[in-house]
Length: 333
Image 1 (tube, rainbow, N blue to C red):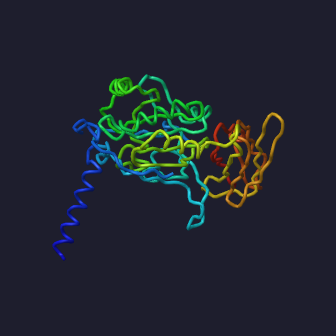
Image 2 (tube, rainbow, N blue to C red):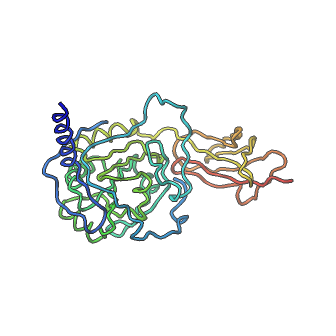
Image 3 (tube, rainbow, N blue to C red):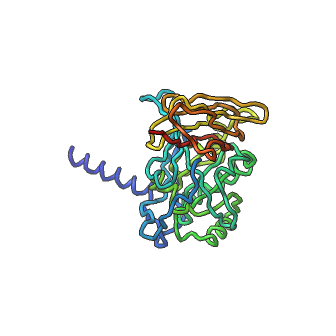
């Protein structure tokens, strides 16, 4: 009996080795497409200028491996704990390991393989969704799913932008352009600069996909290759807005004093060309305005007695995606 159990365990271990190739991120990584494919399908804030530390070769992640075991993450209808309002991190330096569905991504820009600048918030002005695909040129499963992604992209590109961010530091612009041309791929390619997404989501396997909605919020993630064009269509259809307009989103202004304490009772006004809508901050110092996605002029109209605000900080604009803006006031005495 024990001998039979030992043999069974050894066979299971061998099966795992054959279906998920181990690898390292770097030029020593072996390449080539997998012989077989398995897996089933389930269904912005600060800019990068806040980061000052340069990425060195020693900082490059070393655990990224090609993956064809599919796992997905999506919002649940009945969370087991009380949900909290998502806030956009102020910089990428604070996002390591916190990437998940529901997260508001910081805004970011990268230089594409063709030398253009891609900015997440700019892409979301013209598209309802952005699909970020983490990959590497040596990854056979990535190469396997790209024709499916390309076909879906051609059908949905008016509403869905696609950018493939390489987790491999040796995938230069020239290497990626050659790869795209050889495989007839027309969506965007770039490096995952400073490995921001890789670290944020603790990427240990590629391909990994992250879908972002018009608010800059992660709505779906997956580790593993999609097996068909229809699989991409199904995901896009599920998360695309069902009407021509995006619908209401939340704009939040949080008023705090120099010590970081909230300032309840501050009155914040959100204005369009037609009207202004004053909102009184709650006990957390937060004034929330729900409205159509767009540009709004914000004014801090009044503060409780004993607080002051520099006139230059009392007015600003928000949009084109929703999020949280922090306002710091001075408490006297």
